[in-house]
Image (cartoon, helix red, strand yellow):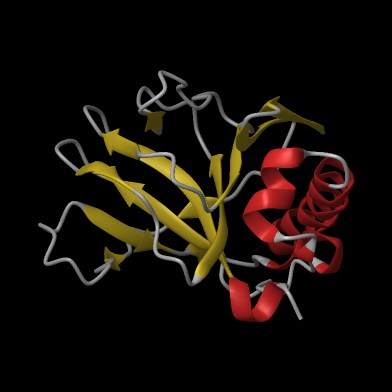
Length: 179
């Protein structure tokens, strides 16, 4: 797997080679994020045995944890944001991977994530047409097995889905990951 910080002034890592076992998904059910959104986002489930899928996910997030710690050691932006707390960073939310199917028309306008969130991992489970866009012009990868990890920051980002997409989505909470 390749993990590279997009820029020393931008707390986003681009990921390639997050290759997961082939699985099938059910249709799932509406995933409500508490904003009264239209029913254009479903949380889907793996049909059959999911243990190898999630074991592979954990293997990759272990690698990502080490890379984030390493990159944060001498990065002024990350030190200012997290005051050296990233030295204690532990990928502690292993049970919170959501598999999301966004339908055409799903839209989250420019926003920042709430301060209880340390970071978000987004991995494309198929080749997608649409991806997260940042106000600074950066667009996250769209190919299967690619994605981003972003530390919570003041960088506005959005998604506008024009064609159904399927992603793995994991949020990490501050309280669980910086003990």
